[in-house]
Amino acid sequence: MILLSQTYAFADPEAAFNSEVEVDVHYKKQVPIYLQHDLGDVSIQGWNQDLIRVRLKKTVTADSETNANLIFKKFELVSLETPNAVELRVGTPQGTDLLTKLRNRQQKKNIKVDLEIKAPASLVLSILMGAEKKLILNQWRNKISITGKKNTLDLSKLRSSSPLNINCPDCSLTVSDSEFSGSILMSDQKIEMKKTKATPKPILIFTQKGEVSLEGTEGDIQIRTNSGDVFSKAHQGSIQVQSETGKVNLVDLDGDADVQSKLGEIKLTANRIQNQLELKNTTGDIDITLPHEFKGEVNLQSIKGDVFSDFNIQKDKKKMEMLYGPELKGRIFGKIGDQNTLSVTAFSENGKISLKQKELSR
Image 1 (spheres, helix red, strand yellow):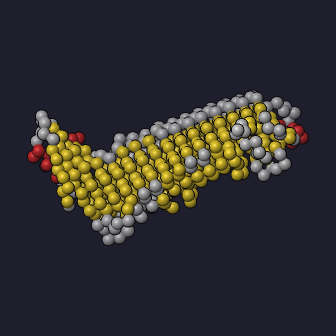
Image 2 (cartoon, one colour):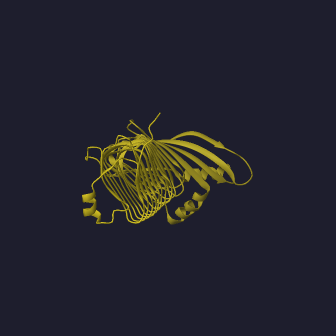
Image 3 (tube, helix red, strand yellow):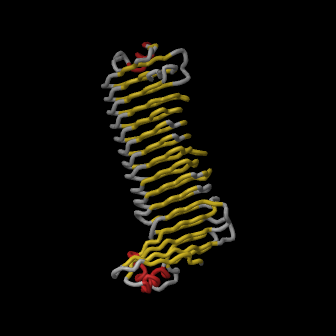
């Protein structure tokens, strides 16, 4: 154990004292890392060294330097190599007697320990975060599991064919410049992804009412939300959205979309369709904008709302009558151009449906 620096700020009773300690953890084999931490924020940087280096930044409130040092000593890094994992936490050994454990629990209220960790990026990583703490994770290449509550999660440069799994109610999440697959389960806060690719399997996002924002994403992304709005810009690939009341706005899509909503409006602008768009809504409006050169099959139906398109659609009235019966108001079925390999389907019970051409750039 190496003591890097120890500085103290003297003041009135209950002054703040600071200490920094760096510890190197060696291990014999490629076992997973299990980290449990509830005393402060965590920053993890993947690297190619064959050791785990942990810097502990401690801050404690105490009435004297002597008492501060006593508390510091009770909150050291505890590492345990088991057959199945390297376990890391900050605190006293597991064998401490009950009275000492109770005293340490009381002293936790006066101490904050932030961790800066460098570890082999090829290891499996499992993190259990304390509530209302921040996690920064950068450059990791293996399976990641994060569990917490009311945390701020900032993940970047992940490159993993193994799944990322996040279970973090009331957390906010930012992911950037990454490639992975897996599930993200959250509730009320914002989920933001930039320049991120779903590979080799889909990214699954589940949220109650938190906003989901995608920008420059790729691959198969599937979103399930209750009332959270969904915004996407320049997604390439397949995107699926199921929403109860949230708004869905997909801008500059290059791929396919399957969107289902009950009360929220749906807006979609596509630069290119690979196969099909399928949009369904109960009450909200559906607004679709496609390139002028779009060619394919169109099926638009609103039970009680109006249907509009400024495309030149060759209506198939015979098939329309077969599909809808004699009542053709609010229904359009036909082709744009001479191809039917691409399809656009939009259905709403009460909302309006609009299929428009993009404005030509000058």
